[in-house]
Amino acid sequence: MSGPDDLPPLRSVIERYGLDAKKSLGQNFLLDLNLTGRIARAAGLVAGAEIIEVGPGPGGLTRALLAEGAAKVIAIERDRRAIPALEEISAAYPGRLQIIEDDVLEVDMRALAGDRKPKIVANLPYNIATVLLVRWLQNEPWPPYFSSLTLMFQKEVGERIVAKPSSSAYGRLAVLAQWRTQARMLFDIDRRAFTPPPAVTSTLVELIPRSVPLAEADPRILEKVVAAAFGQRRKMLRSALRALTPDAEALLGAAGIEPTRRAEQLSVEEFCRLAEAYRLAS
Image 1 (cartoon, one colour):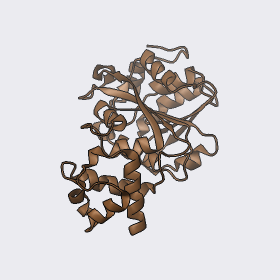
Image 2 (image 1 turned 60 degrees about the vertical axis):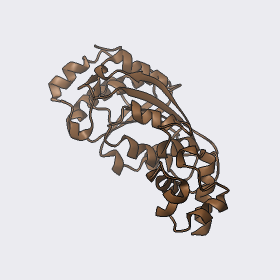
Image 3 (image 1 turned 90 degrees about the vertical axis):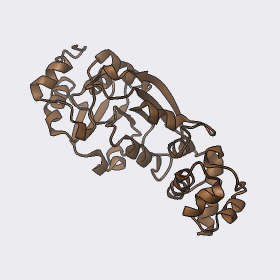
Image 4 (image 1 turned 45 degrees about the horizontal axis):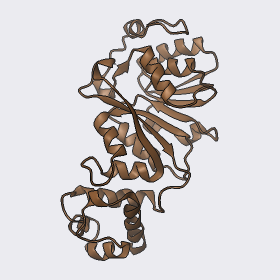
């Protein structure tokens, strides 16, 4: 499907540049420009905004963001095969698309963003999606250099991000995400919308940074405490936290948490209290 930019259909772009999706890069391309347009609009007020896009591939979402009026899109793509396709888009939108050929895990995103508070919008490669999200959530100082995250995940991961205490999906991702952001699932995308189709349904998740986190905690210590607690989630905390400290009951007492509770029963604020108690005891 051609768009309002008169660029060729994405399928022909893929054929012309030999852009078969690589499993090693976690690639699954979205070719429906109506759908990519819906994703772009879900990112909020795109017109006039600066966007950082991760893993644009042949540029379906890139085209949608530019068509919606983004002032500038900075596209980070490690697959060299996709660069000519992105350059075609750049020529159709002069001065509005910056292409960075690099691995996003090696890019200094803060330096790239400057003081412009861009939105980050991406159909993330599934093999690095969780790693990237945790990195963005641990950004220091907080509030971060981005104004919002609108990201595609496997639905199971999306459910873990927004999960509430005492649910089976509640765990490390939920605590880290909800501590510093307001997170919500926007809509699902059927696996058949992708080329090639992944094995599971995908979902679009929005994360808006809180100006002040729910409670005080050191992000690295919080992650360490949460990882230990959920590492043995079926056990009581007095047992699960022994991987963190030999005197788990004293740590729990300092945080005002009953040692017989389990990790999935703790609120985000209680995990922050536990992390702060651990910091003070270390």
